[in-house]
Length: 452
Image 1: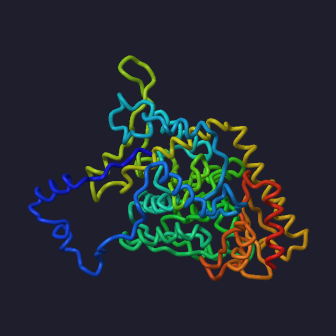
Image 2: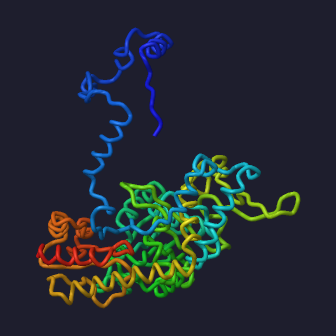
Image 3: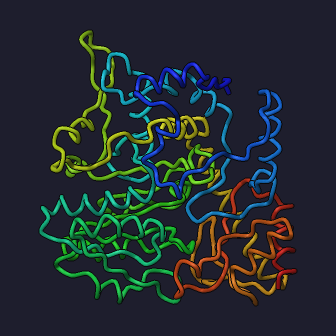
């Protein structure tokens, strides 16, 4: 942190003179008096060392996954982050760079984005990837608008699984109304999976896409093959939404089931959980529809001397020029976070990624087994449905009360899901990653037993 030097009396006087004002009060005179504050009751000024210590002490009041056993998930997951990630991100060539419009001075950034695209296509089983979006929610929105454009705006119905992340759904609703899209929700069946009969009834000839999340918000792995067939049966596009990107290292993504789009959130790949962000959206599709893909695309070429080089093949500059006719409103994206994911994936490697996914799977299933076998009073909400590293449990008390009591015992036990949808079981959504040690599992089992 560099010392910040504020404006002194002479600086303020010069600013007021430039504006032909006599006082600061005149500067703010147009603000309603009811919202103005005479003065802030601030503590005395401190030197930098004392201020650092004060803020550090304030930070200790936060409850963090680094200091508390945490089983929070629901779209944000705590995974290992090799030191190499921050080391590369902190380099000024990347940290201070903007959109690489000039390829001759942006080869490092362009190559990193090209490699990110390559990695995402391999994981998703698709043919083309863009160079990232803002987050998983906007990725879903872009997928719906993408399908609407691909089918030449002749279809306006978006069939959406109820078990898509509720926040993603709310963002989609905000975009759908002004664009004329109709959102039709398909509920989950008693096994936590998309209800096949309800899905068939919802899909009509006016459907532009069918979007399903897998593993879904309740942790259950969906039957992607059945969803793909149902969508393509009426000529609609199939969209696979992913919130836990690590699942693609173990479970086949939509690209292996003929999906037209695989998109979502890649925060799990090298982006630390934060208080609201940042996140990293990704979007992959088939090459035949690449012209309707949102965001930017980095491509490989050769320079004037025949050497390998990189450039923006489909650039966001098109968005600025075409305005309302642009493919997307996505301009600046999460390039730095895409770099973090690239470094993270390449540092761990393919075999390491699969081992990490298997570790998550085994730890989650171990905890699920213990909750049932050790007579804690808690059980799986969907005992016969497959899950990856996240699952929903039910018990003798509701999810909010259980989460509150567990937190009092020093454990962040999970996310109560009933707050999002009163048709879902009133339980806790628990995520288990490689960060959860055996001691953490013991702490959660004991906390839930005591909460009952």
